[in-house]
Image (cartoon, rainbow, N blue to C red):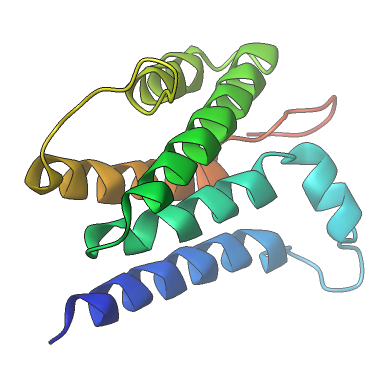
Amino acid sequence: MPPWVGVLIFVLIALIVAGQVAIAWPDRHSRPGPRAFLSRRPHTVPSLIATTLLAPAVLELPYGYFTFLRIVVCGVSIYVAYCGYKWDKPWAMWLFGLVAVLFNPVIPVHLTQEIWQPIDLATAGLFVVANCVLTELREGNSP
């Protein structure tokens, strides 16, 4: 099986999981619209973009792609860490803060491609988990 097939399956699973969170409302007629969902989870779209960019990073791609990937993943990680800080979720703040340091484009961490590939896939998985778990709790909402 070519490696891109595994990457494609991973991205599709990530999108399905994120989609399930968006449509899993108990009552079809009383569910809030997509804007209400995104107002409680503003990190969803940036996280999905980072996940989509991280998945093909296991392939042989030009160095410019990985530089662009560092910039995007570092920025999205900082934003998710800020959301974790704002919503009093210290695990998200620390975890994505470390991801931002690892992917920072100013002082890059130089590792071999064999080391970066599992890191890229694990980071994509972290963004998927953040989409499923990290949410802003408002008054009257249960976790």
